[in-house]
Image (cartoon, rainbow, N blue to C red; front, side, top):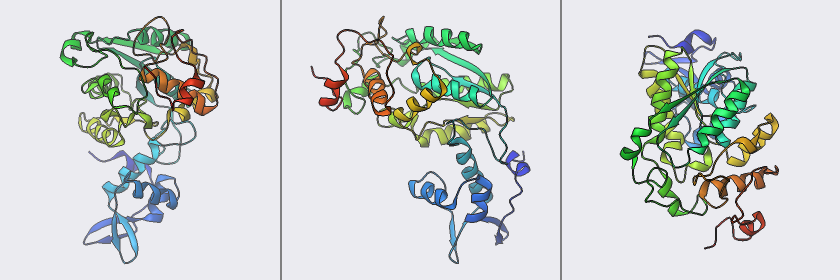
Length: 327
């Protein structure tokens, strides 16, 4: 199957070596719609292929060039959502969003809608302790008129045991995500399972992309939120069917504070979103995701409208203790 990218760009290879066409740095920058300096930064961070040096020129094969262009499309800076702008033209797309009802995925939902995309929201009931998030997802989608489905995968709970989110015998730890005990919240292979289900629904609905809101702050704890993981799944989705399906992960290199700022600009009703892993009536203000949420609002300079339990420490206390929770 011929790549759709080749049909949309007018940029031609700069030269051929041993019968193989290569793009130089300038041509690749024009194709991707970014500066040469940006390409150098991505290359130094390992986000794109290294290319081949030849007579003081940096060259990229067709396949390498397409990876760079896809990376540029996913990191469109204006709204945080990709518009697959391979030819420089923004288009309306049909997108399945993995939607938890949490802060990050709600900001991505609003961002996709602001870009004019048609969004199908998919929530997953995998037997999680904090089912309260599914209620938030339903309410927000209903208010926005967004198609929303909840996949009942609660039978997976016993297969995903060992996490504080799926096993009642494992307590949800308090503290900051940077602490080692936060690994107790890892649900085995959770994002891969969710992305696979979202990919199936996306293909059945003739969608062109699956979106999820993994962000830079997740990397230390959750291996399935890393840039390397999203790159691999993006490629796998395009190999899983004859129709090309892309993975959009526009927040994967952004901080939680960046997401809060974007959400504030988009008018996201943060108070209607749910983050707390303990799943009580109010956010506990002490678990890893609550602490991260509070820290993000503080760093973003945006007022936090969330109601926290009376046992939650104040922001001033947490700042004084470097966002750690004292026993």
